[in-house]
Image (cartoon, rainbow, N blue to C red):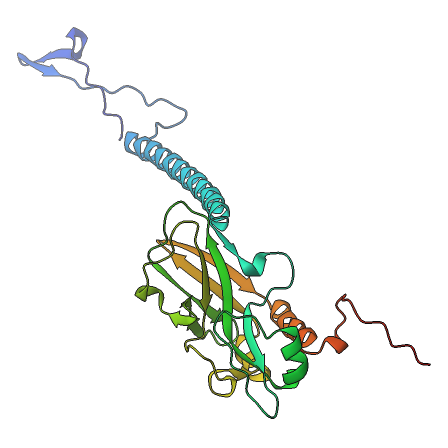
Amino acid sequence: MATLPMVLINQADIKSAGGVALRVRTQEPAKRGLKRIPSNLVLIGIVGVLLCGAVALIGFLLQRSSASAAVETAEQSASRANEITWSFDSPGPNYFLAMVATSPAAVVPVTPGQNPLSFMESVNKIDPSKAFVLGFQATGKNNLSEPMVNVSGSIRSDVTNETLPINFVVDATPVAPSETFGVPPQAQFTITTVNVPIADPARDGAPVSEFLTKFASFTFVFNYDGHNYTRHFSKDEVKHQFDLFSNMTRPDKSTEPRVVRKPKKTT
């Protein structure tokens, strides 16, 4: 805003002219130097500085909040990881794929949740080159002091994104979680993606080569009461399942440490 001219009114400025007093207006000489910045621009600048400061403060607080939330989420996930003990994470060879092989003469049925056939049955009846995968299986234990009521889950293929829902195994029969009362505290439970009581490999399973085209690697998701447990199974882990199965069904070809009989002495 420009500086208004100063109006001087004093005795020296009053001159007589025909008896009429005239007021003579004079101005201060213009001051040299820098011009004054208009007050409205100053106000706008102050507001801009304050807004920038506010934005920076909000960004800092949001970043700090996000970092804290990430830490809390990681801690909660680590804590929830101990809420269930899973068979596939325990030491030793563990079968998380239900598999069976057939001989030319017979088809050997498998009950959901059951490990592959015993050693002697394997030697006599099973041809590992004719192996079938029936589905995913695992045993878990609820380590909580509270029940798991609202339960669901699935495995999701990394190859096709196809999902297979899980069932509880109750009295050797696959049952949808919604048809149960859930998992009591400290209770063990078995899950499987097999959905028939007695599986026929040729009808209900898939040859190994076909299974690998769809589920060479996959993610297991187990949901319970608003929480979820997620576990990824890599291609190497899936392949190792077939190695375990082959070693079991053909012990003479296995490279696993084992006890063998001494050769008979010839006379």
